[in-house]
Length: 601
Image (cartoon, rainbow, N blue to C red):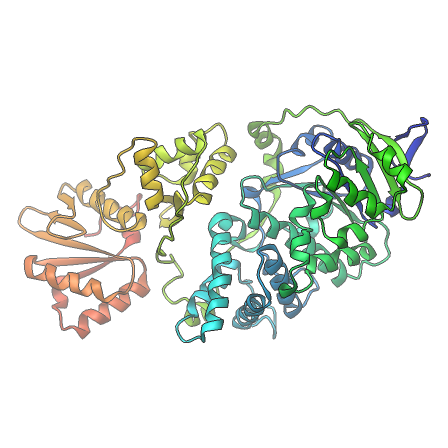
């Protein structure tokens, strides 16, 4: 067969090729670990003259940057807003696609997907996206806030849908919040012109699945919106461990409907988007991916069940099946369309896997710096209707504990020790203790995934600082497994304690005495002839007023330091409503106690 992508040689020593046009109809390779699937991918990536994207779950493909022009994007370098429709795609259509993809990747049933669709449409309406395009676009973080606004007045069933979807969404923004923390991410339209490796190692399974599937859908909808029909091969997707996306179990889950990803498999070929997928377990792949792959490769397969799943799909005769059972490493039976299967010795692509995290940062730094995105911000209408007082910092949510026992790597243990020793140290600073920020981030993700810590954000003069807060499970692990003392000064969550310490430092820097939790004050200040109580107010809560009332019985003056102006205005109104002596109450904002600012007079 003539073509322009060489796979290898037949057993008779003749070259065996595929045409690029055949790759638009998709390729499936099945074989056990070590049979040559990754090597096959290397060969195809270097043979084709069209750009490709690959989703890398094991850091296998960064090493091709030694031989190819390649943009490698570890997930913590990625910026992507999945709620921003592709160019030319109406928001209402994209809302439907997004809800289907999110539902499939996180195993939502139809009722929950319908609830999700309703909330996306509501969010788009808040941003006037159906009448005109109003920047900025909402992100997953705004969708989460909108759902949290729901709740108490809903019927029981709808409340169940909300809780289910919110559970999935909160986990996603918690684990990969930096990815989605933008109004406009990197231009995927421009990335389609490059060879890109999306490294997803370190993310949990649901987030990996969602990112892979939503990027598939994004590209298809973009091609459809631009009418890129019948242009031949435009672009290729490579995906190992294909069952992660094309799972037969989800396909057979009647209550969730036919997965959108199955529909895309058949439709993408018309727009020149080819899929090259591989897996060890053919029995766990969807019927759709097996039926809609024009080219199939059976490599060495040790498991009889998986072997039969492929031979049945290829309609091999008994003699051909017996022959295929004797395949060795790097050998495959290749079937293109309805043509007879051909035994092929695959091209052996030799590649040293020597690109470390440090090497990657050095090689890719310039590429990363050239990528642009727009940071996340909300519209005044959204703030007024959904999240008043949240424009600067969302109050700390309750930590939901994971009852399972933690099992951590040495790197994660090391980061946890650092968290216990220095609770207010920012993540970026913590990563400097590791050989690369990638390894530090991987250790952080391990702690988060196992429920040992939870991420928090605090706004400082220099921008956002990310802190890690121990959960009860984390404290137990640190005390019992690492023999660490987790006691701390200050009360409440890590953000509240951060500001207690910051305020204490600010007063001490002026020469006064300041202590935490003395006389039940968040910060007690002795200024020689005057004693002062400082309250740290995270929100506009009635209990803050009760604290102020008690402090006014003991102290001449009470300071209330507030998270933002909305909290401050709300507490001022409460002070007046409770007829407290406003002349003895002073209001300040957290920002006045930032590192580069002096204590106000």
